[in-house]
Length: 266
Image (cartoon, rainbow, N blue to C red; front, side, top):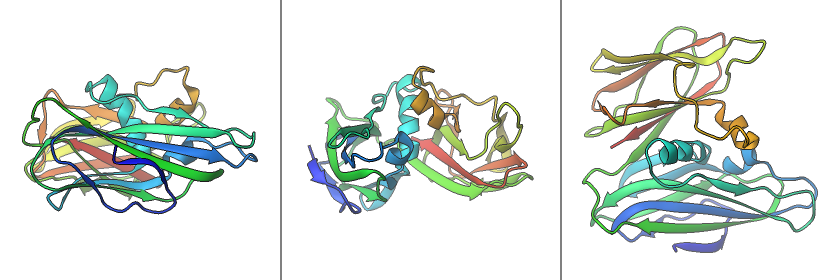
């Protein structure tokens, strides 16, 4: 346990992680409600603008906490890693507690210094917020190249526009795509209507929003599903794509709002 009930109201310092066979890091948050307005999952998962892991002084992973929450469902159901997020929100009753737990995949064996940093942006309708961080270690060494998570953000464009997602020495095993605007019952507008993957200018994949994988969340979990509905996943872990010279190209239908694309690399 690196942090236990650590009062959390500002960006954490760089927390040193003992460099053994690191499988992943559990990130837990507990909050005390105001007793006036209930907390929501959407605002709680967005409490952190960045979760960053550095190895030997180099950034290995950089992801928003909201994206990590959604990605955990993919990691568990599709890639058989970590666990599904767990959460409970506060109510309008005074002195009620809520919690949220997510999992950051690492799969790293190294003798280099490893540090974790979590940037805090605040949580509405909570009087107090606590942070728990626990490292999960494996019994055996992991491959030389750990899982890396990187993201880019941009405004959608109605014509195909290219964005660099290269990571030297890595291979892409999946893309998590967030679009602010998605189709609805009476509208057919998209922040991401089509997406291409290009390696050294050669097209390796071309897909539409609807052809990409929805997030595997039970429909009964309507709260999490309402968040995950704005995400899609492209899975290539069985046939990884070289990422030394990797670009994506996207286009929208009508929308010009925010898009985030999160790459999973090994």
